[in-house]
Image 1: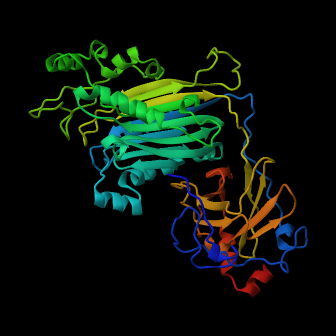
Image 2: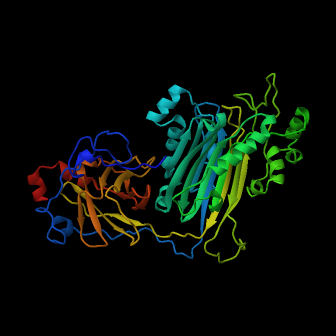
Image 3: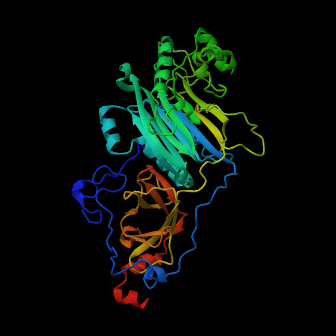
Length: 511
């Protein structure tokens, strides 16, 4: 999801004015507002006045975010998917692709790159107005498992989308998203790459999904496009503007590299007998890495699975058409770690900064047949010492709950956090799909009472909160950083809180 900024139109005047056309967080067009009625003016609540109802109620113990000691080592599970989907809709079951039934996996992040999504005019217009079918389906599958979509970028048929478990959100900052078309001399996006640049626990990570030119004879052109995409990943205005200085590059996609020299019969016999290593030396990517020092810095797992192209659709048979294209490993997952001093991976104490990426599984998924390509996945362990161990904002929902139609939210910020009047706090059901999937929100500059330099309090009106026994989360979104910088622990809103809002004032007084 490209980051968004909330822009205040000059004609709106005060942000406290209840203009019905005021924009919601995360929207580019006015689409109605959440009610922020019940604003308590100076006659109702004075800073530091302990006689007021918000201070009379007992405060829930502050549940600060778990602090990760600087010396603690972390291991994050990352699952990368690349698939040329040939303009098809998602299949009904993605369990194998996403490894949902693998009890030995403990995943924290999904990174999914698709190529050749339906990019016709009607489809693109529909996907612009609504979620595209793949993104929507992936959110349906992953959000119940506590994964939230943190970013995505689309360029015609290329889609890159990143999901993370919600507890990691305060430690992930989306720095940039970028499209690099290479078709028609750089003017058309049917080929090229899309990039998401982020910080993860303080480490700089670039993620690239690409689609390179096809056909056996176009290998030089493929390598030129690879270089072009790499050269265009400059990030001016950031601490690390050169992509080669980023701590980790994950690069994957339909790279279209073919198997040279060997004939069709020999290649198919090797595949039939699972003698894949006999084909490696003539794989164009492996050949290129032998001659290109920079390309050689990109690592890949062993190709211990059948070539993933080209198949008859709706089957596991290699091309039976008149062209009878030779099978090839067109779909690849590469990675590059920033050059760093060598350290013993198995040592009990890791230097700071320290990070390493270990490939745990690299495979194709032959069961999927909607496309002439088979999807490829790579599962990694990313081991690191966090450079950022405490969230910038600590959030908590106060209780017991007030009878004044309002829910009180307290938050504190770290000394180095720079807030913006356009920061906002969203109330979410656990299992939210993306950052705009809030059930209510409040601007931090509105409905606010500041008690001291370290504690701020805002409130959300009860009428903005759905009546449910589901668990909720609070997230603080920073407009300057374009990211969530604080998240509460899950909590429930007692049903009596909702019921109190429906009672006559006399009954509330008796309560």
